[in-house]
Image (cartoon, rainbow, N blue to C red; front, side):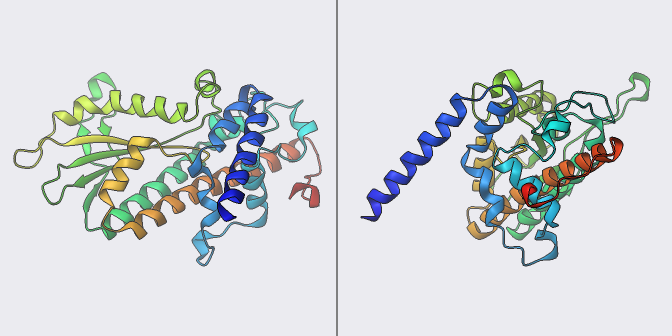
Length: 288
């Protein structure tokens, strides 16, 4: 029967995943726990019918290796080398470049902008009006304070309060999160959500809202491997419940943006490392 087959398949999948997690530690364990969350594979559901939904083969290979929990090519080289940009020790899973390397900051900014654009487009399609990067606190040159901005201000409709939104993407294999992410799935997203809330919430409460309505603040947080924080996902569900097709497309597109970015970061970093050490990149069939 189909029901029994499905039940057995889920059991086999659970035990296999559990066995991998029990045998892992450190960065490897944090990565596996995050990859085991349901939303991590949404990027594979994106149909590359448009140019913006396509990856070059090398980038796709790196993204797929990370998704499968495999080391990137040339792991024997990587295990004995340091990053050419910041001299940190690199690992065979590429977590340094996906989390803290200064050379990845431009890619992180592009990724953040793409996710922000996708969210804004979906909200507009659902009938909302938004303002990009609303100012919450003026800069103070006397105290060297750059000011404070959210990513979006979403104006409420049908009696809903206005919501200030700030997007964050965090890596569960970053050293600052690693102690927690080895023990609990989604811990990096949870910690980043709390950090953003502490930074913005009190300032947002002081902002003027609509008649009789206090504006809200909500961080929209994703982990690098695709997991969406529960409160962020719940808010998107509420805002887009009348257009479920838009909501589903948005989550797939954000997942795809995250994975394309990870693949591109690793592809660039590995080529740079090989060039520095006169090492032939392994883009043979073994790299696929």
